[in-house]
Image (cartoon, rainbow, N blue to C red; front, top):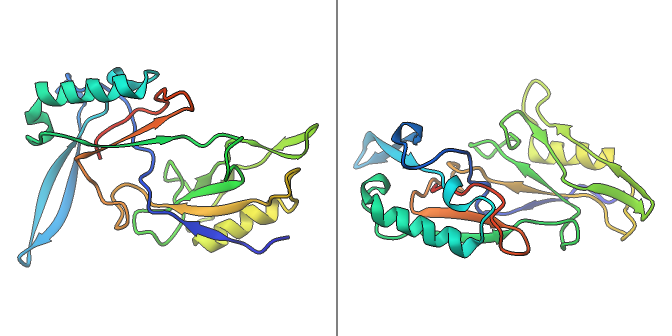
Length: 208
């Protein structure tokens, strides 16, 4: 079997969870501790999701609706005049890199945390040794009392699927940095939009 391989990306990750902007009681706040002039202070960042504006709609309609909300409620977005939109198509089974397992790290970027912070790592597709021989792989628990290092987690994943698929590919791994980590700091002016191949939004965007 091919040796364990860990690829690293600094791209932004999933940036979604529900609710509407108009109801301020549903707005999420984050307390960010930063140091300035040798004095520590706390900043409140307001995170707003755009489920109603975007989910299952075309990305262009989504962006227009977000911009309209920004214009209508500038005070909700710290008075900013514009957002930076990051639009990315979600990976599909037919895409290059379908054989790569994403390992979400913890905020300190040293160990594997998983999407939900429970150490569980998931793979979205079946693994096919032949067109008529496909089976489900994963999930994998990379928190065995203590969170595993990325290299340990990847080795466990690859050891559980030792065979190449019908395209001659083995499972590979790469690390994702969660929002709020040093490599992916919170950016209240950024909105991540994930679409399918037709440009339809598949995850709930929010500013972070």
